[in-house]
Image 1 (cartoon, one colour):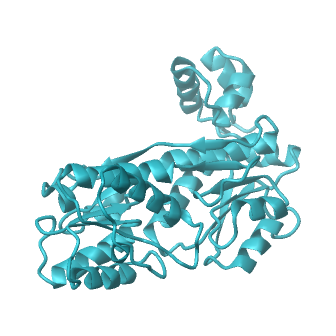
Image 2 (tube, helix red, strand yellow):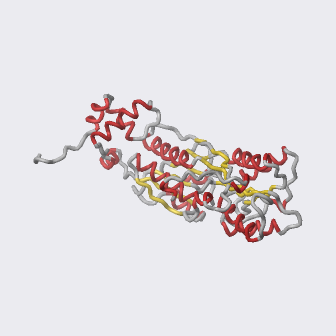
Image 3 (cartoon, rainbow, N blue to C red):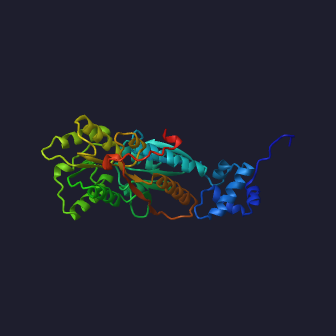
Amino acid sequence: MKRGDVVKARLVDVAKEAGVSPKTVSNYVNGYEFMSESTREKVRAAVEKLQYVPNHVARNLRKGRVGIVGLAVPDLNGPYFAELAGLVTAAAERRGMTVLIDQTDGDPERERRIAAGLGAQTIDALIMSPLALSGAEIAEIATMPLVLLGERARPEGASYAGIDNVAAARAATEHLLDLGRTRIAAVGRVESQPTGTWSFRMRGFREVMQERGLPVPDAYCPSVRVFSRVEGERVVTELINSSEPPDAVFCFSDMLAVGALAALHRHDVSVPGDVAVLGFDDVREGLFTWPSLSTVAPDKRAIAEQAVSQVIGLLDRTAAPTAEIVGFSVVARASTTGLEPPMNLQPHDA
């Protein structure tokens, strides 16, 4: 070794510095969740002090892997899936894996082709949010470890990460009712996808309305082609021009809600004075609408972390397929309450 050369720290060096076993350091590097905070902090400090860089390439080669996980989603133009893809990529990177992202456009043949594999040794595992096919269909043809996203994708015996959409829709509807709204429209029925995520949100909405003894006219559940701003504007324009317009609109995506806000603004309808608007997904765009958009916020970070953790468990054969249901919250902003909360932006939100 020449003078001035830097000696690269090894895993055993980190273990010695932290006063733990090499296995504990390995668990830390691989994102093992069940570790005390004090142990995690000792290993983290040792990693930083020694500037330890895990050799993920060598590890993957030893295990016969390429170190790449696939992520297949219907649409990357929509903010929800774009934000989720970023979170999955970050979670995978922390575990030494690269993410290969593909957009399916909800095409059944494309979903089948991706689930069946992209060629030998292209990816080690697949995280997928199917739109055209059911989770059971995807699981049947998958040729690799698979984690499914989305309410439609919950077959028996397959790994899944997501929220309880029925419970989330119930909470959203109760928020509007508790504000005194009684004529609530639910925007997001997609007739071409009879068992899509929207159907679970519609179920939660109808359950609460029925429990409160409030009618839901068919016109208050308009059909949309896709979850988009254009469709939100179109159907809400029709609703407010009807003989009995709603006093609240529960949109099954934030993009539908952004379109709804545009329609109401163009027709000089006060929000939330005349019509309250509530979205779903808590995408960052909702912070910058006027008024700011109330929404249902799935814990997207937890979905991403759970999906990647499940992939690692399936690859290492340390975990059986499981369904992980993560939390959600109703974020009340000005479009339902009339109050503009502080934005509390992070640097990446600017």
